[in-house]
Length: 346
Image (cartoon, rainbow, N blue to C red; front, side, top):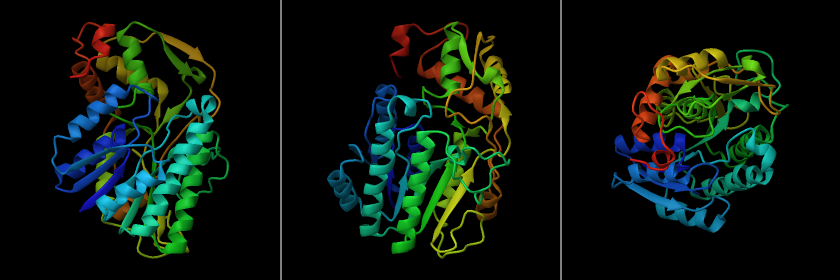
C-alpha cells in the first residue's frame, strides 16, 4: 500500500513507519522536527527509516497547507496515519499556542487533504487524556469526554470532533486511537521513563508527583504497533458498527490502545530501579495542574476487532528501554553518561 504517516520522526511514528516499511509498504513520512525535545534523536529516527528505499522523507510543519497538499499529491495515499501533534500535558501550560497550531490547524490541513484525495482509511492518534475528569474505571470508548483537564487534552478531543464531522459529511472512514502512556526504546525524553532513567544514572533526584499516589496504564510500544497494524485493514465501513466507540451516524470509531491494567507510579519506579540496579532519590511533589490521577483502558473493543490485546509486562518493557538507553548513549552497566556521551547518538 501507499501510506502517508505524519510524525515519522516522533517516538510512535518512527516505530509504526518502521513496521510498515518492514512489511513491504511504501511510506511517505512528514515531520516538522520541532525542538520540543532533542532534535538529534528525531533525526536519528529518520536516518533509520531512510535505510528503506520505500521511505520518502518530508520535513515541514503541518500548519503549512500548501506543503501538506503537495505531499498528498505526490503520495496519493491509500491509507493515512496521522500521528504528528504537540504532545505533553505540562508543556501546554507554558506554550498553549503550539497546541492550537499543531493539533488543530495541522489536523484540519490533513483532514482537508483526506477529503480531496479520499484514501480508504484515515487513522489518527488521540490520547487517554481526553477522559479528563471521568472517575469511572476502566475507561470505555463510549464514555462522555466533556471535561478535559489540560489544553493538550482539549485540543486532542477537538481533533476527534473535527474528524467525526468530516467522516459524517464526506463518508470518510476514520479510526481514532486513544493511546495510554506509551513507552519503550527510542522513547521521548520528556516522558517519565526517560527522565527517571537519565536522572538515576546521574545520581539526581526524580520528581514524583502527588507523592507517588498515581497510576498509569503503561503500554509497550511493540504492542501499540501491532494493534495499529491490525487495524489498518479494518476501517469502519458504516455508521453504528458494533464496537463501543463507533459513531451512530458516521463511519467513525474511537479505540483504546492500552495494556488493560493500571500500574502504580511507585511500582513503575521500582521496575526502573530493578533494571538499573540503582535506588532512586525521590523528590516528592504535589499533583501538577492538568494531570490525571489514574488511567486504565478497557481494550475489549480492540480485542473484538483484531483478536489482539496488549500484554507486555511493565518490567519486561522497562528492561528493553534501559538496554536501548545504555546502548544509544554508550553507558556501561555501572557508570553514568558524561555530557559528551549524552549528546552523541550511535
